[in-house]
Every structure is written in C-alpha cells, then in structure tokens.
Length: 510
Image 1 (cartoon, helix red, strand yellow):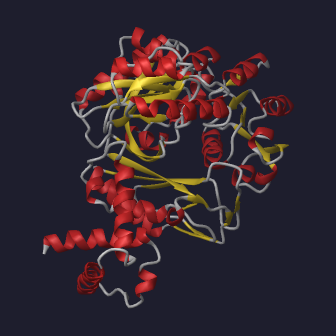
Image 2 (image 1 turned 180 degrees about the horizontal axis):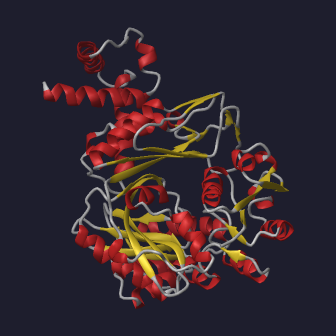
C-alpha cells in the first residue's frame, strides 16, 4: 500500500480523497492555487504546495507542476479526482513516465474511451447496443445533412473529443442543421481543441442511466449497479439517485453485463462509469464511458456499502478486488443534490463571495460532502459546486423525505445557493412519483416560470389572489405560519413553489 498520495484537485472532491487516505493510513499531499490558499483541503492535508495563479490553466491543469510536487514530496501516487486532469491521457502517461502511480485507468483506456466515436466502435464490437449514428467525426455541414437524412430527424450533434454538454446541439430539421453544426463545431474547438462532431439519432424523453464498474489489474471486474442521472440542467446533472426510480433487477443485470463487456474491450482497470440512454420501452443504448470517479459516486457507496475511493487506491496499488459480483447487495435508496453557489432566481448565475454563516444538515441517513467552511471565500475561477448533499433511506420515499428535511436544515449565509431550487423539485409530485427523464428539469422550470408570472400579477389577478388566499387558509389551519407579508412570501419563486405544492397535495387529500 502507498505511504503518501498527492491529491491533484480541489474543493469537496479533494476533501473526500484526503479522508479516504486517512482511513487507509496514507499521508495526503494537497496542491493549491492562489485563490485556494485558505481552502479546506489545504487545511486538512499533511502537506500543501502552491502550484500557480488562480486560473485553472495556471494551476490545476498544470500537470508538470503537479508531478514536480509529487517528486519533491516522494508521493508514490497521484489521484486526479474528477474534472481537471482526470481524463487527460497525456497526464496519466506523464505520471507513469515519472515513475509515479496514476490512480485511475491506463493512458490507453483513457485515450480509447475519451474519443466518443472510438468508444462507440469499441462498444459495438463488445456487443452493446448503440444509438444509430456515425462512427467517426463529421467535418462539414453537407455530410452532416446527408447522414441526418439517412437516420431521420431529430438528431443530436456531439463533440467527438469531449462531453459535459459542450458542442452538443439538437437538430430537428434540415433547415436547422447549418447553424447548429457551426455552433457545435465552434464550441467543440473552443472546449477540446477539436472541431469534429458526430451525429446520433435523438431518443426522445430518455432516461440517463449509468453503471458503475470496478476492475483490478488481475482481470477481475464487477459492476455496482445503476445510478439515475436523468435530472439535468443544460446537459449537466444536478440530482442523482441509486437505484434508478424505475428499478428493475433484470434490466440492471443486462445493463451491468453490457458495461462489463465494454470495460473489458477497453482493457479497463480501476473505477469507471458506462453511461446509457434508456427509452420508454426499456431499450438501452451505449452513450459514453467516463474513465474516472464520478461526482455522484456517494449514492452508490451508501446503497452498496462499498467505498469506491478506497477501492480505487487499492486497485492502483495492485491489490485484487475483495468482492465478487454475486456478493454485491443493494440496500435501500440514496439521492444526491449538488449544492451550487448559484442564484436560481437569476437564471442560476454564479454567486461567489464570502460564506458568512454555515449550518449543514445531519442526522440519520444524511451525508454532506463539502469543501467549504464558515468564513471561506467562494472563488469565481472554478465550478461553483460547494458540496454534495446525500441522503439514504430504506426506500426511495424515505430517502426523499430525508433530503427534504436535510435541505430545510441547510443554511449558507453571504451567498446564494441552489438549495431553494432543490426544495421545489423534491416537493414536485412528478418527481416524487419517479416520472422523470432528461427533459424533466426543463419542464419543471417552465412550470415554475408560469407560476411565478401568475403570482407576480402578470396573469389573471383574480386567480392569483385566489391561490394566495387558499394557501393562507390551508397553511394557517395546519400550522401557525406568518404569511401577512405578501412581498416576503413572493421573494423567491422556489420557496413559493414548494409551499404551493404542499398546499395542492393537502387540498386534494381534504
């Protein structure tokens, strides 16, 4: 086992990795930028080293500086976390060339699965179902229009060299192709240095389901079941669950088997995630493979009882997987909300600044993976996620109830966060029934906008007055709440949405 590991990341994931090191008796080394001099991960590590100015390109993406710190501190391994350098083949190779262990898959696996078209070819060869589309990048509009006509509209354009919603466009007709292709190609070039895009048939209203795999360097590979990742805003996940809300053990077995075959085709080891789209008939199609630890890994940990980061470290050290596929058990249900320093009332604009007060939730079934503390200044240079709030319950109903309770306890002063947005989502009946797909958040936001306009007097004033009066009557009959300040009640459409949802359910029960 390693004696010292360098954590090549920041924020909540750096804190998570440091804690895993502590559990294994390993000394963690941190790196930090100018903006992160007083960060929590810096305070928790045994050693911490400055690597550059605040922009990521000058610090957390400066692989040579990070490797130099590893050499200086005699760190035997580097864990990249997720984001930044975690899926950069050149970095994994440079780490290995320096005689240091990269805690992740081989550079070859990263290169293969990082190219989306090559990944599709590998998945098809492994026998996994794939969405109809191209097997190579498309470089001009004419070719794109020809292919789209063959597989029929609507189609999706995607960047060949990356993901995360960059270089992605939906095209519903030939007339839309030219503009969409130009924008997708330009965005792909800016984000990944490669303008090529590939084309897939658009599956309407799919679920986004991913399978977690673990593989050691001795040929053993298992899957840890699925995660529901359908709740997305701008193609970015915001809420994740394990198991999927439409859980089916047979579908899990089929998808797990496909994920293992894909990982085997990539000669994969360490932790990885195979992502699929699932249509309304429960047909599933390979989407991509993420060759790293996922942001949403805690929900799998809570349901399976397996510490994914600890297993990553053990696999990197050459140990054999300690558990077989038939020994995996899924107990209960877990849900994760990504808490962002964003203002949901201003179209989710980033809300950097000083955290003047912080109260985090606790109690049965609650886990808060955080990278901040009271008095910390949230910087503008990085992803605005400040924590991941996760709850576990004996079933989905209990997990959701605990999340609602946990969100009500969460308070962050000085900045705006997405907590009110999540409170509104979890109070929505469509979500509570598990009737979700990748378009759910868009539909939800449209409903909230309509409700906000109604309550702001932009719609029929008499209807708005009736809703407010009904809410006041029912709430006061149930519990003593001061709703005399109408303007205060209307300050946040997310708070109002949650209360109207509760009122609506109570009204129907009565």
